[in-house]
Image (cartoon, rainbow, N blue to C red; front, side):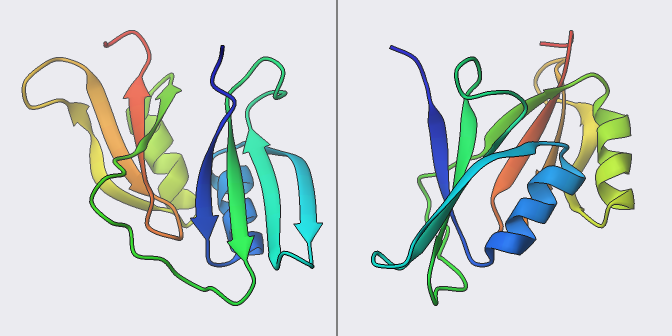
Length: 129
């Protein structure tokens, strides 16, 4: 067994694809539209689905936003330099919600950003965990 993808419901497919590709540097790997089912999918990630876990972005026709709920936490991405990654996100128009720095109860360097739909994304600096 292996992890294939995590699905996120998005309110605007083009806005979400732009965020994940332009702000986080992922690639759109494949897309499918299902008019009869009234939804579209886009799979994004840093590498092919055969070797990498990816995100499935799901847009349900006519639904512009979702309640986040209390169960889902965040997506984590390893970065070489969390401080630099935050600066790049800000320069690209993204939202940093916790600046880079060591965890309160440890030495792991982390930061949090937010995607256009409000999903939290944690940056974890390579070599600090």
